[in-house]
Length: 289
Image (cartoon, rainbow, N blue to C red; front, side):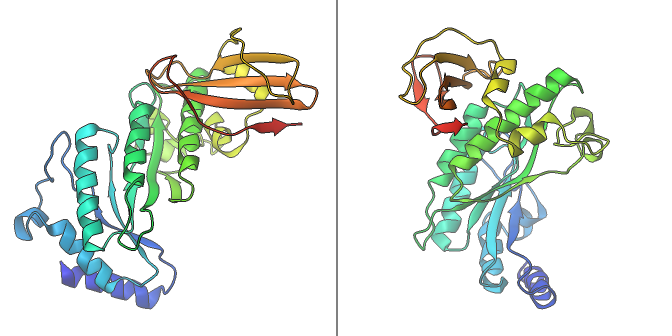
């Protein structure tokens, strides 16, 4: 193991100095639905501590500026989340890890964003030996939908938008957000149309949902306005309405309030984590003139 890691890192350091910014040292080591590691030649030959040894050697031979990551999928699932956090804690104690990569292969209607947020929140709490927060990456993002229809495209766009709102909360720790491909027809999940561009390389609504500020007037297309009254700010005097942006994801609805006044449009959003009586603030005032 040490010989292999030494050869790879030494060769890349010599041939591409300064180009590589990070390595996924170990990838997908935890078994699904289990508190154990996957059975592999690494566990059979090196032992259950092979992850610690791999990071030890990677730290030894990596260039000083290169960040070292552990990377895994289904991080939002409780059992795997607990095991991956234990792995990361062990590597932090060794002083060999810099960050965690969230493989993020989600599906509209089956992946609950509530648990995605919990997983990221808990991992983000980790502090490295040098006192800095752990670095985070979204390493393989895609969001599947059941069929290629305009309605599903819009639902997918909302899902992507909510994910990016979550990631922005951890901007100080987030190194990068990577989609797992660019166009649907070349995706490993091509039959679920999970990416930002269609098979003709044209941007889908999901692309605009994460790259553009969504105009306030377009929120009404995502759900019917209700008549719930709340207190408007001094800058917005004329009209107050609220909209539930996404009611398709159980226990994780977004509510946005729109204020329309003489100084333009302004809106603020709250997140409802469990029920309508448990609002938590999330976001800042934004004004559109």
